[in-house]
Image 1 (cartoon, one colour):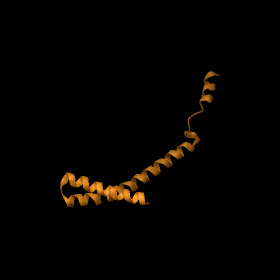
Image 2: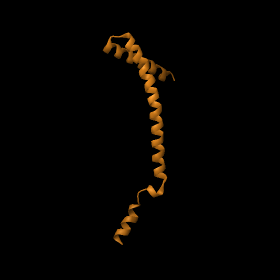
Image 3: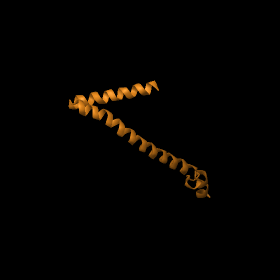
Image 4: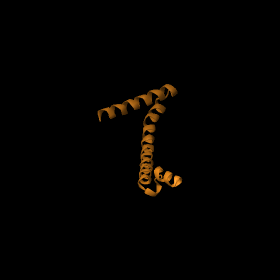
Length: 81
């Protein structure tokens, strides 16, 4: 947890520094420093939901025998017979 916390603090410091270097404005830098992570957190929530659904779809399709690829040895036997 300490590593995560220190990374978060570092991220905020970098965001503030870069924005201040680009704009020269403390107000804009402060706003960007806190608004960007907030928006990123919401976006990450929806990204996780999408990714979970995608993984469940893929797991479901691999379990369904009708969607599994045909056994190549059976296909070869039918062709050569």
